[in-house]
Amino acid sequence: MLVRTFVTLLLSAIFLLPSTSEAKKPPEQPYAELSGQNEAELEEHGHYTNKRGNLVHSPAHSKSGAIPNGATAQCRDGSYSLDPSRDLFAS
Image 1 (cartoon, rainbow, N blue to C red):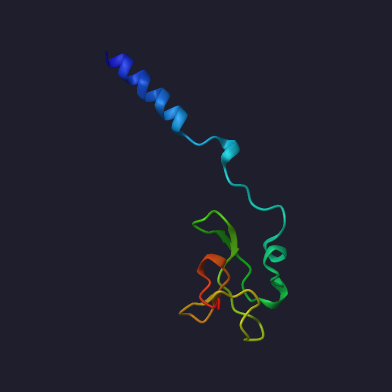
Image 2 (tube, helix red, strand yellow):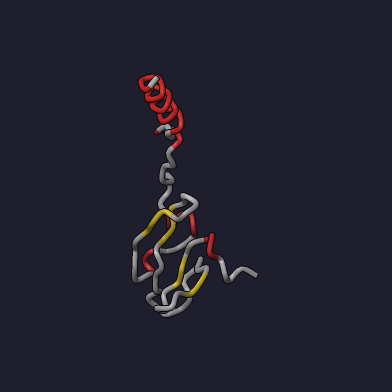
């Protein structure tokens, strides 16, 4: 009985694990092309995967001090979020 329970749990775990083919892959285009953002205009150049699984630019300051193209919210430190899921500037 114990072996049967173990085998059942093991098989259940195998079928519940996501397959590697379902894993989200980063876009083939660089983020700057996807957002229309010109990296040369920004001070910071990092990126991360947001909770929706999308590659987004990390919060950044523009070199000119203006609101960066594609900004969606202003952070407390004065940088701007470029994550479309946080678009507080949408009208």
